[in-house]
Length: 161
Image 1 (cartoon, rainbow, N blue to C red):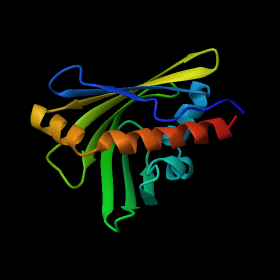
Image 2: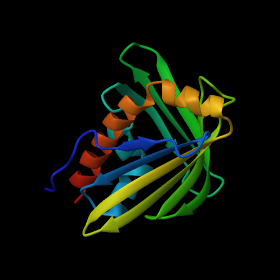
Image 3: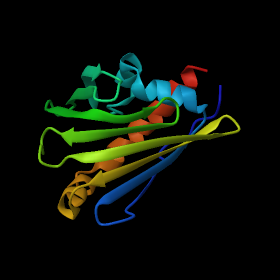
């Protein structure tokens, strides 16, 4: 089994409305993509260590929708949903994302997967509509949960090899 890493995602702010997330995975890109898009696999990584995933809906087609719901350890529900805008299997996925606690803050996420020597670099560019929405996203503590979720995503992808 390939060696995995922990907490290695790099989060930068390329503009006043963008968040860029970059992380390498010890798995080929088709397995990272599979773990990213398959409901039973998403359940294994999306909540990180922060709660229990209670619902995953994925209609993986352009114009299809997705919705993820978890109950956090504090007992409150956290839900996100969106629509798939572009799909290039194993390469690129563009979708909208709305945190249901802040329904006016729609972002567009562009996931890109590149592979070198069986390792995959994942980048997600989160494009918010306003600096206020981007800052609210960053200030929500998203990075801690993101690091945990991506650690689990890598473990799921590696488990598929």
